[in-house]
Amino acid sequence: MPINFYNTLTRKKEEFIPLKEGQVGMYSCGPTVYTYPHIGNYKAYIFADTLKRTLLYSGFEVNHIMNITDVDDKTIRDSQKEHKHLKEFTKFYTEEFLKDIESLNILKPTKFTKATDYIDKMVKIVKNLLDKKIAYKSVDGSVYFDIKKFKNYGQLSGVTLDQLKENAAGRITNDEYDKENAQDFALWKAYDEKDGDVFWQTELGKGRPGWHIECSAMSIENLGEQIDIHTGGVDNIFPHHENEIAQSESYTGKQFVKYWMHNEWVLVDQKKMSKSFKNFYTLRDITEKGISPVAYRFWLLMANYRTRVNFVWEALEGAETALKRLYGLYLGLGDTPTGEIEAKYQEKFTEFIQDDLDTPRALTLLWDLMKDESASNADKKATVLDFDKVLGLGFADLKEEIIPDEIKKLAEEREFARKNKDFKKSDDLRGKINSLGYEVKDLAEGPKINKI
Ligand SMILES: [Zn+2]
Image 1 (cartoon, rainbow, N blue to C red):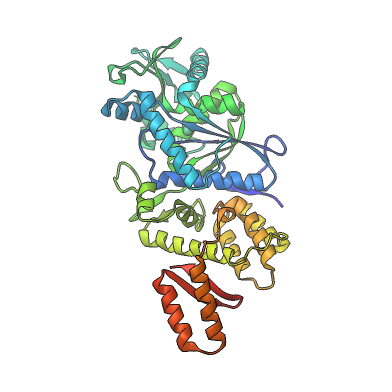
Image 2: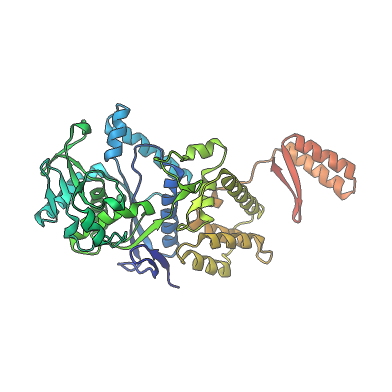
């Protein structure tokens, strides 16, 4: 069965064929560690994780690199605001990020790469681009990429050459800008007093790298000149990924990435969740409301990664209730050892996720499986755990709640009264159990006790 992914580069769903049989080289643009990421940022990492899990599930070996941007305009600006050294400042937010991704059941990449560990590799690429006259030095010593020298500029984002002709007269020093500002961008930023003690003395002079060159250097160094998949949010398409292509392909002369995959935004009140709009929530806001981070993962999986989703608390609470129901159904399968994976379900599940990560259909299938009375509990368990290799909802770690003996005894007495049709006594006992914080549900397989 072919695996199909939507490729931003070709603007269509394509069969996934890796460069090397059975192996996938994958790069994900990671966090800029200057603050707590908002939950919209985490959509990108949950998407990349689902993609990686799908590839692993499909039998590929995956070499996954994710960068940590620990030097750029924002990290320098905010570390100075807090009067901290850049290293100390970024270390704190890196550690917070690692805790967050663990709570979201995101598998760790094969390697996290910190931008500051790759400065010499960045210098090597910039020097090569200067030698090829694709980059040039400005009067202050900064180095810019001449976008007119790269004939395919705009292939990913759709910025047209005509637009460039009108706008490309100048240069842009900021790392972030929009399509209307497509201009020569900074590969190396000459030292400026505003950078304080953040600089490197290199063959390019005293200064620091631009943001875009960081990802090109880390990707090439760890995964080689060509990779299979590069992921990020749609807001990375321009200028970041467009610039990564320009730099990398000018340096190597080869196609940089075969499949570009991007997730859509999380909206709040139909507006993009963003730091600049001040309409964002962090994972801390979610846990403070007593909602588990995995419920957020589950909520995102209910829509395709290429769909914009509108965040409202009621929807997240609804997702948590549904997830708890699934957990309850799973625990209700009992202590039986896991059986065999149901082949017909596995076949469908594989078909759905290999169709551009169709997680909404995969989740519907999970509900169908839970309700299927023709399957044995043992086989259902095995199948749920199999699906969870991709979904990452944590079924394997679920434990039956420990019910105190006193409650169990009361439930047994109630069951005895009920069987003897002594409904008054059984109701009284039910009330007593409730008053102690538990409830009894009469299911087909017998009474079930839960904590209220
Ligand atoms: Zn990047």
